[in-house]
Length: 166
Image 1: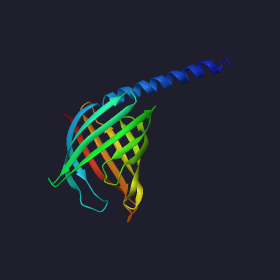
Image 2: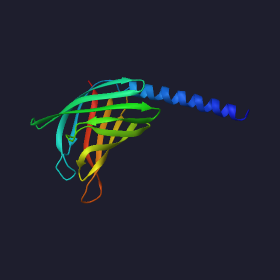
Image 3: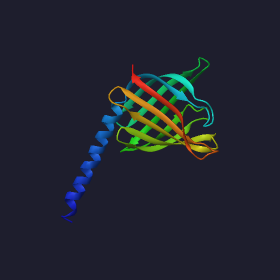
Image 4: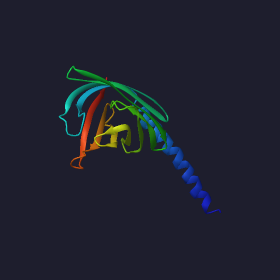
């Protein structure tokens, strides 16, 4: 039993450090962001250039991204993600694909939160895709969505939005 005590203390301390690291990471994403990128409505469609603005609110264990992207001066779409952190594991919801609220689950690795998307309705032949929220230095962030092309079975980047603090 004595031999387990140091291991148990180390484990409890590491959990506390992981929580503190997550809070610091999330807080670094707070603020107003703007930028541009490309979006594909479907894996086989041509990319459309978009300009976007986002506001990010955070707590020690949550991230809320609310934004709007506009393309070709023809369309404007609200985009948002609400995430809860439990250690380095994340879960929450995503709105923006036009199919209803999608579920998000995943984890953080380094400066990126890698999430699996579960669409409310079929998109590109299935209900799943991936979203990465990546911090790029102190003043930049990238949002990337990938999906599987139903015809080829290959991964396709369906959106990439590069943001800077505004």
